[in-house]
Image (cartoon, rainbow over all chains, first blue to last red; front, top):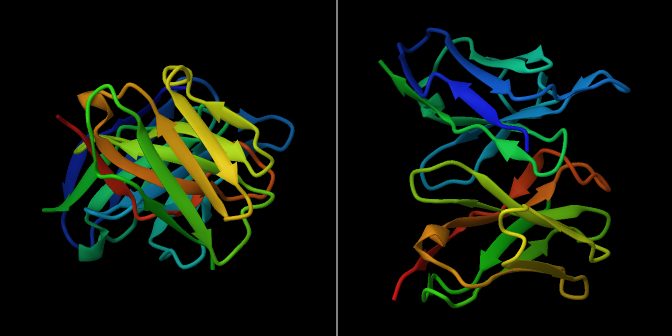
Length: 113
Length: 121
C-alpha cells in the first residue's frame, strides 16, 4: 500500500496570511503514460463529510475559491491557502488514487492564530 | 445532482455483523465505482472497499476476510457488511462515488453525510 504522510500535524495562521500543508507519498503517484499525478486534497469540517478541493494534484474543483491551490509532483505535494479566511478552519487530507487501496494522509488541522 | 445517503443501525454488538446501505438518488448507479470509507472518532479516513455496478468488488486486504460489499441496481443501492466487529470498528461510515465513470481508482465525489456506528454491548 502507498503510505501518505502530511506535515505539519496542525498549524495556526493569522487571518489573511498564507497556510501551507505538505503531503508525501511513499512511492511516486505520477503516472508516466499521461503525466498526471494521482493526488487529491479534501477539506473536512466537524460533523461533515470531506469536501473535494483539488484533483490531479493541481486542478481545482468547480466552486472552490481560488485561494486554494495545489502543487507538486511525484512524491511531494503542497496545498496552499493563499489568504486564510475564518471559514477555512478545518482538517485537510491528501489522498492518492494511483492504485488500490486508495489511501489518505493522516490530516492537517488548520486554525486561526 | 447525485446524492448519497447511508442508513443502518447505529449500534452493533461485538462479534455481530455491521450492515449499512447507501441509497443513490439523482442519478444512476450504473457505470461508476462505489466505495465505503470509514473514520474512527477523531481519526483519519480509511478506504474499506468498492464495488462496480456490475457487481465486481475489491476490498482493503486487512479487512477482506470480514467485508462484503454488494449492489442492487434495481434499487439504486449498494451495501456493506462487516462481520465479527469489535470496538475498533466504531467509526463514521461514509459511502462515496468515484468521480470518473468507469474508473476504479479515483478521487471521491460526492460523499454521503456519514453515519456513526458504535460497537458496544
